[in-house]
Image (cartoon, rainbow, N blue to C red):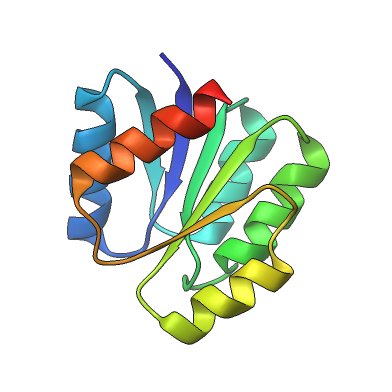
Amino acid sequence: MARILLAEDDDSMRAFLKRALEKGGHDVEAVGDGIDALAALISDRYDLLLADIVMPGLDGIELARRASQDDPAMRVILITGFAAVALRARTEAPSGAQVLSKPMHLRELVAQVDVILAA
């Protein structure tokens, strides 16, 4: 079981992702923006950061950079529904971060999380 920090500003998407990851056997803390995610990263340790790229306060790319600086072993998955943002993330995200595009099937996301955590 991995500890996952989920940062997603869309309430329904956050609830769906949290539920799917928990059903996959993971311990998930879910927050609604980058600022709350940063606070969680400062106060606790996680195996994986799963963050939407476009969020208020602090975007997912900057959040991933800060998380990777503080804990280089933490895995990072960034998600977005915007093709242009996905391209930007591939060049600006920390090394090793995965970028997934929405929409995605929840089973596929959980499988990708498991693959990344096993690597």
